[in-house]
Length: 276
Image (cartoon, rainbow, N blue to C red):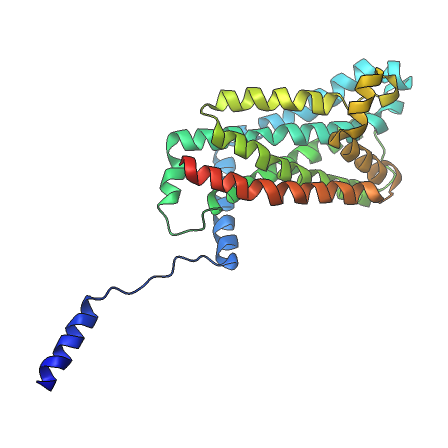
């Protein structure tokens, strides 16, 4: 009788499946996101054409805007460069963040992210990894802008200030990329993501102090330009690069970037999981 009971317990225990923990720790989530970021870097390595826009745009913007607006606004191209290059630095990096949403939509349409969802990885890892890999594109964009500016005659006051300005722009572009990632999840076509994103960015980047003094704009446009986040970011970049000054504008830009990430990252992941 005792032997039968023991055998019954043993057999019952053998039929009970082990309970697997589905919880992914923060450390593992970071590891998964890093792995996905390396995947994105490998894509760039095997397809360098993805860097074409962040290489060409700084050249086109800097040369074109300096030639068109230099004499009219500052009297000469050389005098206009301290105003122009920080503005182009912000414009190019912000425009490059749109590619995140477009690329995400392309991958989702191809079923790439569906395969990722079947893996035992953190839900945020594919999205975060893709966005982290795009930071390389922002770094290329900021480096190219500074190099083109130097070739044209731009001479910043502080090398440390320029490096800090580039880093600030990269962080802000990464934060904005979460917004475009959400658009990529919500919309059905990459062309739609591209079109609507640029429609939003055009007034933000051009109705600002990036290219021209705000005082030259009509009154209603001045009001928008003064509260435009792009204007505050450009002002912070100019303070660091041109004057070597680290003021409150930097803290404001960083705080804004952190708020955008804190709000948009969980929202993007939640919407992605529901739609997927």
